[in-house]
Image (cartoon, rainbow, N blue to C red):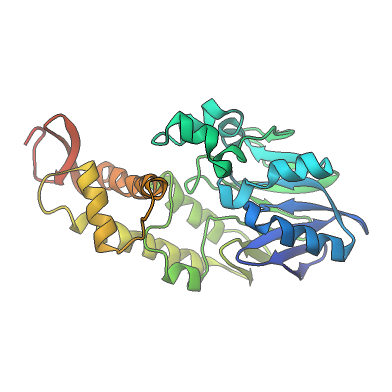
Length: 304
């Protein structure tokens, strides 16, 4: 991975996604969202080349492509770990992870390495209401941006650089995003507006890019994209259909790759929040169909 300077002591490691790096002194640093195990070797090589040792790992949220290597850096380098409250609660144990990944079996939680790697002790939990913290001697501002994940946050470094995780995607990534993952659609849309209103000198987005100055237009582009995908999903419901039939309709209409049962479960988790938001917003009506949860065009009545 290539080390790119952003501002002051704030850097990124550039690979398939951006990993944040805050250099504390000549030999130590913080890592922000160090990603999946696929990035582990490249991160270590970049750190070795720079003569840096990670003493702390912060994650904006617990998704595997941001948090999976956290435990490795803790166990290998003794790095302290830091996550927001709800994200820390999820990775506390296999049971709490299963509660979050509701449609995965307990056996899958216990045997799939990518899921096992998520379970990790958290040394510093960012409690609700905290807007700043000092971690490994570095003062950071915390901006609550839930939606993409239950307790997603952004970190603002002492250089006034916002490490924004997944709250926004850059233009090229957005263009290929059919159903961007969102945990809570209403919160996510609000959080995009929050980031648009910040006054940071630079913004780092894991997927993928660095932006200097205002990101208000990028935020609006993300919002328009989500609203467009919501409309496309809602338009597929021309008659009553079960949740599973809705998932299949979205997969077919958007030509989403499946190919493996676990991928199918992930896609269900991707698509369901769109369905739930369309129900909450009144675009669709929640009904039941032969005992199964189903949706219908909004004029339908319960039980039809």
